[in-house]
Amino acid sequence: MIKLFFFLLFFISFSSYSQDKQNLVIGKNYFGKTINEKEICDLVAFTSRPEVSQGIEKIVRRSGLKQNFYVMECPNTDNCFAATRNGERLIVYDPAFMNKINNVTKTDWAALSILAHEIGHHLQGHTIKHGGSEHEKELEADEFSGFVMYQMGAKLKEAQSAIFNLTSDYATSTHPPRPQRLKAIERGYSNAKELYPDLVKKPESQQEKRVEPPKVVSEKIEDEIVIEKVRIEPERKKGCINGNCSEGFGIAINGKTTERYEGLWRLGKRHGIGKEFFKDGKKKYEGSFANGVYNGQGTLYFLSGEKYEGNFFNGKMHGSKSTFYMKNGDRIIVDFIDNKKEGKAKVIYWGGAEGVKFYRNDVEIR
Image 1 (cartoon, one colour):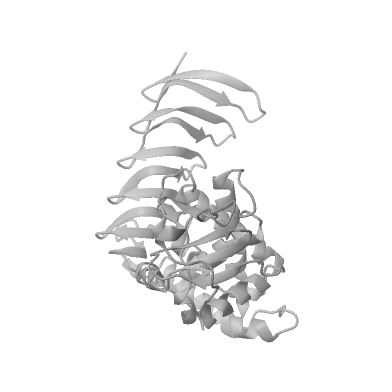
Image 2 (tube, rainbow, N blue to C red):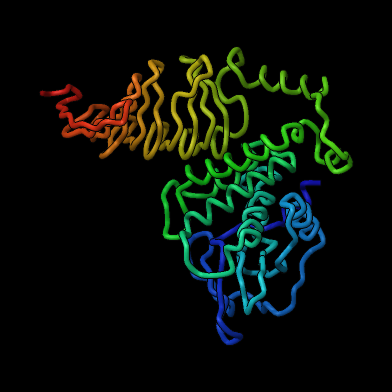
C-alpha cells in the first residue's frame, strides 16, 4: 500500500506568491534556488495521479481539516513545492524526482512524510501571506508531518528519514538546521502518540476499519516488540546490526566498548546526524559526526549526570559560548578549547542568580 506513494513529492521552501496573473510563481526549492513558473510548466490545468490523490486524502483526513489546495504533476522540475498563484493554492511535484527519494532514503515512508510537510504549510495558512519567521513555519510543518506519520503507522525513524538523509546540519535563510527539524518531527510524533496511544499497535489497514482504537496490545505485537529488542539491544552480535553502515542510515555496536551508534554513515564512518549510547543503553551523545568522530553541533552526556551543549571539533568539545550543565543544576557558559574551559565564564546558579568565573586550562582561577 505504502509503495504507491513513492511517486509522491519531495519538498522545498513552504510557499510562493504572485500578485496578479502577469506575475510569476516564485519560490525557493530544497536547495535554496529560486523557482520561476516559466521554467517549469503551465500551472493552469490541475492534473494529478490517482495514487497521489489517495495519499493526500489519507493525510488531510487525519488533520481534521478540509483540503484547501490543488495538486498537480509537473515533469522536469526535479523537485516539488507548495505555492499560491493568483489566489489558488498548489502542490506541484515531479514524479521522476520521487525515485531519488526512494534511492536515498530506502524507505516507503519518506515521500509520505514530505507530502505531509507540504500539506502542513497549506493547512496552517503559511501560504496566505508574506512575513513571519521562515524557520518557525518550516518547524511547524515538520511538526505536523510527525503528527500525521504516527497516525499512519510510521516509526519515528521512518517519519524522520527524509530530513535525516537529505538536509544539512546548517541553517539557511529559509530552513532551520537538521537537528531542530528532527526535534520538531519528534515533537509532533509524540503529541499524536499521547493523543492516540493505541494507533501504532495495529497496521493502518485495520486502523481504517475500527470505530475506537483497541485498549489492549495484542500478544502478536508484544512478541514483535520483544523480538526487536533482542535484535537491537545489548547482548547482540557486534558490528553493523541494522541498516547500511557504509552509506546511509545504520545501527552498529562497537566491538570493544559495546556502545551503540544509530545514525548516518559515509564511506563506512559515522558521518552526519547520529546518536551514541553507553553500553547500558543511556544516551551518550546526540548531534553531528564527521569522519567517525564528533564534529559540529551536539550534546554530550556524562555518566556523572553532567552535560555539554555546544560545538565539537575532531571529537573534542571545542567552541565559543558553550554551555556546561553541572550535576547540582548550575550552568556554565564559557569557551571550550580542546575539551577544556577557557576564559571568562557566565555562571547561572540553580536558584537563578548569576555570577562570573574565570578559567585557565579547565581550572577555575580566583
